Amino acid sequence: MLGNDYQGQDCALARALEVVGERWTLLIIRDAFYGVQRFSDFHTHLDIPRAVLTERLNALVTAGIFDKAPDPAHAGRHQYVLTARGKDLWPALHGLLTWGSRHCADNSLVFRHCACGTALDDNGTCRHCALTPEPADIYTEPRASRSTARTDRVAAALRSPHRLLEPLATG
Image (cartoon, rainbow, N blue to C red):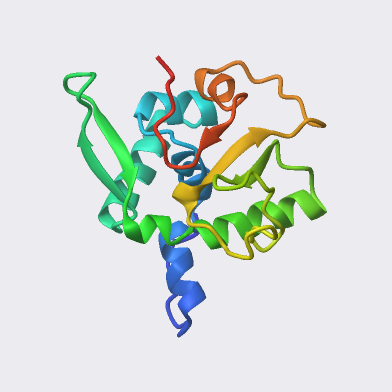
């Protein structure tokens, strides 16, 4: 089994990978930007084993990427919300989504600037406003050329325009 540290590597990238480089971790963070906050929604949308999801969420809380708070709608359950440190991952995540769209398969969502509705370019910039909006000022909408066969609550909620970081209404 591979370790999750990069001893001997005196590099900021190695340190960052120690936090976000485990399998599933970036998908969990992506879903948090999309508004997923509940364990059950992460589990269902990602098809991730419960034990792995528990381990990844705990590691992200320990690393200061997520805050874990009681879920006011469900006694005994928790919500996982990106911290400021976690939100700082948006440019890297957007860059990976862009790279994946360019070289692997189109992303199923388009990212638009809330203020004007313009699609963000590959650098995350709104060309109309000439600025790079913060995640809370970006919304997603389904890409017209992409359909999804997924039927889980998160996938269904993401079929409508949705502001990043705003909790998804998954019922």
